[in-house]
Image (cartoon, rainbow, N blue to C red):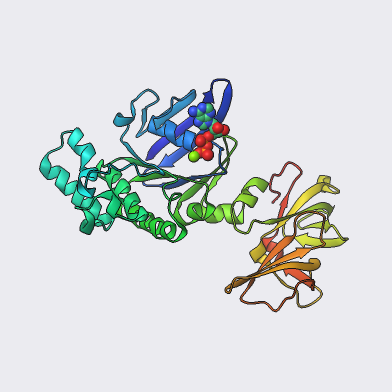
Length: 361
Ligand SMILES: Nc1ncnc2c1ncn2[C@@H]1O[C@H](COP(=O)(O)OP(=O)(O)O)[C@@H](O)[C@H]1O
Ligand SMILES: [Mg+2]
């Protein structure tokens, strides 16, 4: 069943349009992540679903009912923000119970829900503590617990991990993944600018930029088959290498010329009309390897070598005037700065984008 349906959803602040017509169906029990750069409209979209922002155009349905004009408290949603906003003078238990007391739930029901949420979030030992006696990660778990207690149909998260340090962010991310397992029937919509959070948590990712959807798909779909240059560069780290190129041979396979008179053939079909077209050639850093024979597709000179232990990042210059190309090679590599290097890649792992940035396949 569809839990949340957005039909041509628009938002303007005065004359400024920030959301340009979003169509999206979110299934019950799905974990959906909105990802995109800062300012692309993620929070605005989430806040419209929550009822914290007016909807300028289009219709929003939750559980099959149009809720454009339904107040937040009647939408069956609960939202977790970046700042945990706990009451400092109340214990963990009372913070979680607060909303239910306002709603005049019975004492037994409040106790049952608080203890069940505390159990899911491993907060049982902390119920009598005040927020100041908790770590940032534990405080964010209390904020999540408070949302769980409301027993929402849809959970909304707006960058819940961005105030935590790196280690806590990973631990709390794993906690949220466990939570979504434990509450598998509950729909979750999660906003982040962090593509690692998106990749690890989502059933489906919605990539946004400038108030429009660039692509919707499962994490691996976006990684392996990005619809356009924007998604190709946004998903994956370090980002996909992009090199200007032109098509020299078309057909079932396509050959392109890269700067330096080097030709590469890709497992991508193009029509004859594309011959001579300016394109962008893309290859992920992790899909490059050191050429052993005459099969190199890229040659250049190393400028920076970042040995990270499990991988080595090799920055290669001299291919074009643009940014250095990055190769992510396994383990510790015996390269030195200024060394000539020849790189190759599996033709099936190469990407091609037309002049408008759309993926050719
Ligand atoms: N209350 C507001 N008034 C005017 N412009 C706003 C307001 N809130 C957000 N915006 C603008 O809308 C755009 C999207 O913002 P936002 O949804 O917060 O982006 P994100 O969460 O993706 O970083 C931005 O350009 C922002 O400046
Ligand atoms: Mg935001």
